[in-house]
Image (tube, rainbow, N blue to C red; front, side):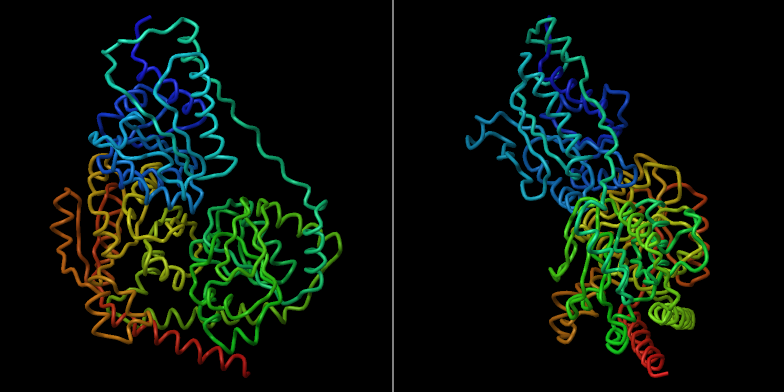
Length: 594
């Protein structure tokens, strides 16, 4: 049989990915990746997004995989095109998001010969990849086809199950790439093997018998006797079952839950969890307060999720040394102070086992002396926050967060840009009766690819998605607006424009105003209206809170990408923050003295 081995090789691999549950592919055009692009194009089980810019494509795939929970294939040509994927791969590695990166390549022998568009792609992402293989030039032997299919299976198993995160498969191809060129021959047996898919979906992983492990038994004994403890939940995307179980654990231990703004725990109605749930939103001020943190120093911390966004939490961990237990599914170590101990276990299962064991031991704590001060402090700080925010009628950065939470519909997704927006969300977002899904790129915390990631999230379902971003992050990823227009993706972008680098006003370098202004603030004076409209994206600029609410309501009904710009004064917003921190310190001091 006459055949093009490049096309047949790529098709066999892509069919195996589809059998393994890959539903999406992001493809950047190029000549060398023609066989891969053709194979994806002709697989009806996989939805394709054609994205010109590889960097945008990588971050779009990141958001798509994060929201869908499904691995996403990334495809590009050879050379620096592959390098453009790297920022998104780093973020996927840090967040353990499944990407299957397929880079086309020149044959190995053409490296270091001056051949056009040829670099060394061998394990290109080696510091931030879970698995790499170069599959070699296509060969139509039984042995090589079998090996290719095993590679596809290993890529899926690793990326989605065994060691979650991005994997990299490098595909060298010789010409011809196009399907109408059929210079190769294949046996009927080999052809049948090419068309057969071998992937078998793994069964659900069984929960371990934790009570057979000494560390958990020792911890249970410790928890029976330790009354001064806190539960910290950093950024996480865990399920409702975890949320229910951690609140049950909190209630039996009488430990407060310090819930990061990106933890999902501040928005819990879908879990059927109502009333007093021990969740603390305003803990940043508590931890910044020397008097409060000293008066209520815990003996133990149970930490779930990733590293906390909170600056106060980071300083608290650095200054004190309580026993710290870190629990997550992969056993990752989320502790910059390097003082904690990390354990690999499903967080929901951990909470359930601890709760049931304590209940069997008839541990009933009627004494609320430990948790009540946290709950009371959270209440008075919430009142102060509302007073501080809403007494300021002028547009400012910190009020934006709760204005958004007030107006957006329940079950919306919110993507938070790095730098100020994610920190402000953590500091100011109040607990809400609405359910929201919160997304972020806190793995490496870069400001690149933010719009692309949000568009990937928004492309999965027809639910409202909001992006809260700063001006520099918006500028970094302007070209991603092409994706929004091409695929008619509904995304509401709240663009907070303080003319560049406003976060640096709050850092120690601000003590050197001249140095700060020239090397950090870097005002850009960009006209975002013209830039946005160049991509045929709807744009509006608001100057009042009433105007802001009206613009958001109209954007929700438009069901397409809209940019709403809010110009703020970074210095005045910083003064408002300082006023809140100062007044919160005074209130907490008075509470402790009372």
